[in-house]
Structures are given as C-alpha cells and as structure tokens.
Length: 182
Image (cartoon, rainbow, N blue to C red; front, top):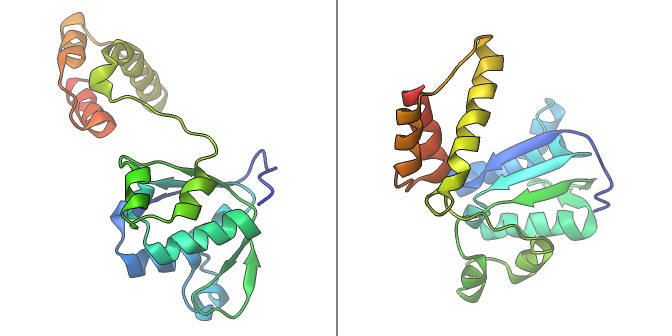
C-alpha cells in the first residue's frame, strides 16, 4: 500500500450491518460475473482513495486476512480467486471494542491489529466531554442551515438539556436528540 493518494473516493463500510457472507461479497467482490457486469467491491471502489471501516471488530476472520493482504501487498483476491487485483487505498478503521483483548481471545487478527495500530485516536464518550456539546450543536445547525437555506437557532434551555443528557449512545443518540429539539 503506497498511501500516497491525497484525493480520491471515500468509501464507508459499517461492518456490523452485514452478515459474514454478504460482507465478503461487498468487501472483496463476488464471483467473476459481478465484475463483468460492472459491480465492483468496496475495496475496488476505494482504489486511489480512502476506505473507512466502521466497527471493524465485526469484520470476519477471512476478511481480516483480505484486508491485511491489501495493507501489506496492495492487492486483493476476489472470491473467485482467479487473479490478484491491485489496490492503492488508505484504511481508516473505528471500533467501540477493545481490539487488544479480542486479539488475546483469538477473535481478531494480531497481524491486522498491528498493521492498523500505526496511529490511534481515542475519543472519549460524549458524556465525558460535555463541553463539546455546544460546538457540536452549532456545527449541526450550520449544516442544516446550508441544507435548508434558512437561519436556525437553539434556545438556551434546549442547549442546557442537551448538555445535561446521559448520552449512552454517543453520536447516534446525539443526532436523534438534536433532530427532535431542532
């Protein structure tokens, strides 16, 4: 993997949303007829850009090997295994699990763990950084203003309620709550 690409496609995959077989087909591609019909895998679509893997702890062991092959060798082998396909992609992965513990339990590839662990960013839960909530709300307001071409404002009581919430679901809970209040 060269990882020299500054721009290019951004392909997001939530690993939790698929069963193992469906994710395998989406991730590395099905049989050769898929490609002949113009259907590319997510890895192929990300070529020259970034692959964002959300909740990587749900990635099946076989797909962990395929991802490791992309990171180390810059190629994938589709499910039909007829040829290697060159892939130049940056990989960003997120997790809500303790991957080191999953490695020790043999539920996550040790090699992939270290290949991905080059740069780690830990973001504390929203309930532990309540001071960020007003900025997040303002960011959401600006985004909605652009989308609907209108000026939006949140009153102080509503903002105080958002800051005081428990936030057990972090961003999903925040997004849903902010939509209700706005």
